[in-house]
Image (cartoon, rainbow, N blue to C red; front, side, top):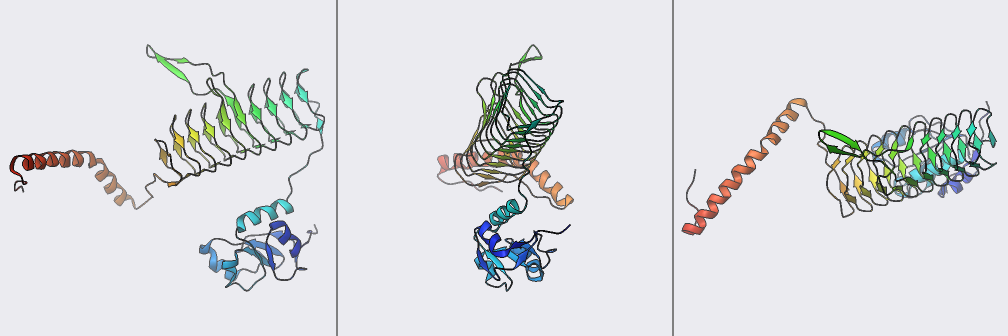
Length: 353
């Protein structure tokens, strides 16, 4: 197959970058620094890869002006190489634009509203009073519950399930197996058993949201679970009932956010983070992977609760010492009380071993 060629000047315009090199130079693809050839474009922004940059055979590199000072090859100069890389990737690999249509195996309730410009694939089920806007693509096996709304241009991959009454904004992407609107984990203990609390809220999702494969967002108990515009959620994320996530926050895989937590805008939450319920996280917080957030974070900043991996015998010593901290703390408090008593009685501490 003949690969399409792109002028380097055109790619610079797409990236919003300044060109240093031959405007008529031709590029066929993007590639990693270490494998890129003369007809390919790479990007660089990690100083740990400097040796790879120097050894790279890439036809051109997306790079910052500062890093390019000591690089002699052709460049697309920008302060944000990763964003420029994303723009070029979108240009070279545009999203598929499916032809509208309704597969003959799809089941659509008579009073559901499906725009003629939507594509409904095999074995999709759309329940009563659901609304599917123009440009929506529902891939095979998707379920849309009663009264649910799916906004213009949204793409739901195979097997996505959206329960009744939820709302999905425009230009959203939901990957395979995502479940929106399942019951929140609400139970009341009585006489040694747990009574289910009906979950009657909804899930409201804004525009431009992306939700990864097999992630679950629970419906609210009374109020709604709310995911604001531009939020990006990785695979295997659990978001509990009544949670609110502010616009343009990103959440990495295997994170769990317990019920009624409020996460601010423009936050970055690493993988395997656990966030307890009924707390607030301020706008702009960065939380390192595997952190446990058990109290509100009221100021923007970088937070971490991780003890990095280390040699196993050292780790055991650290754990053993941590286990003894409580006893040491009580002992120190006792010594403090004795010193304070000596000072109040004699005006100076007594001699002690």
